Image (cartoon, rainbow, N blue to C red; front, side, top):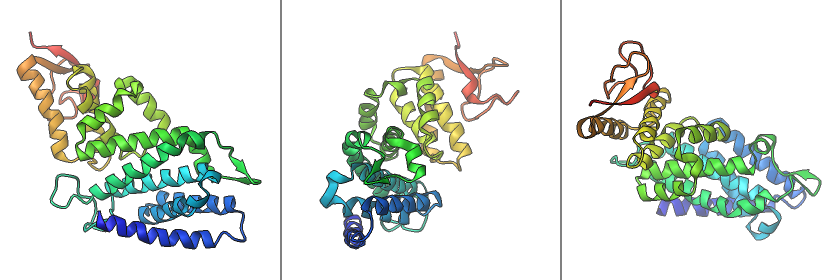
Length: 300
């Protein structure tokens, strides 16, 4: 955390320079351009630059926070998003900076600082959300947000922040926090509801396998059918997103399926050929039906 604090002090210096540049420019225009630059950096894969710009805007407007709730909200949204992107890809905090992400539980665990930072900035954004949602898009004859962020909107940004928090908790192994988050989120309690929300929120594709993994861990003690589907989605999507979930996490899902067969005499069978599938496989060996299209059956 010492390095994280050092980064924060550096960003504070950038924030002071940002404020000094505002004297002759409409501040809402300046904020919008900074948000646009941060969003562009993020879309181009430069999470470090995106986080620096967005956090500097948020900190630089702290003295006049009441004037800029919407713009500061999206600055926090972009900062949290940048740290989550870094956790999943190229970290820039800690000893593993620039070496590629190494997931929690490993010797390096280079994603931890970014996961904590994403949760921190996301929590700040959550506090600002009610005021941001009531703020007009135009202030002082200037549009407050660049088109890309106007299209996202406060509600969808909030959903993405919640999903990022869920992923951070899953990667960090905070099972009780996952359960607490989902208790107040009924739409995520079923595969159909989760699919619908994800279709609307459109989070980064690398997050989606982790979201389904978190939902699997939440439901595996309460609903065999839902837990199976969440786990199956997590496994298939991990394969299609550069193996976003480490093998040891996917092994948890496979072990659960085997346990259901051994202890509860439940199997998951192909919807076409009706044959039980091998837990380690992602598709039926006979007709290539994906494991998301399997149904629950009894051995009795």
